[in-house]
Amino acid sequence: MVSGSLFGINDRADHERSGHRFGHKKNINPVRKESEKVNVELITREDLERFKEELFGMLKELTNKPQFGEQKWLKSYQVKNLLKISNGTLQNLRVNGTLDYTKIGGIIYYKYEDIVKVLEGQKNKSPLTSHPLRK
Image (cartoon, rainbow, N blue to C red; front, top):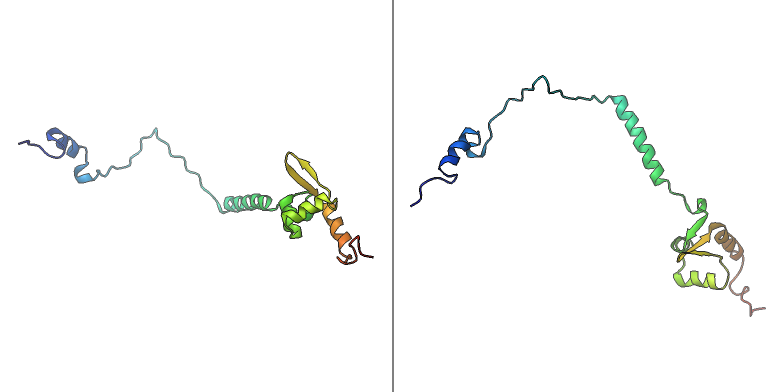
């Protein structure tokens, strides 16, 4: 039969002397030596107000993305969302020359001004009167 405890014969005595008896640590008085300095910074109400203004300013810059009218060039998905049209309709507008575009590295860009011109040119036309075979 093996005698001893869970900690072993000598381990338990060492464990109890270290203050870890029953899993609890000794209460150690946090007395600081003179060589140990504690850096404390006080934050005033003015500091918080300044921080708030700076934070709001940064958030405003991040969330103030240009709207459609402020952007010079739009990507295909933006044009589709703006005009509420499908991929096929947008492709037809490109192919038949109704809408000019620029392709750079596989991404197609449209000038916002061109989109406005197409819309203004189409607003008074009826689909029946604008067809080339109708007279």
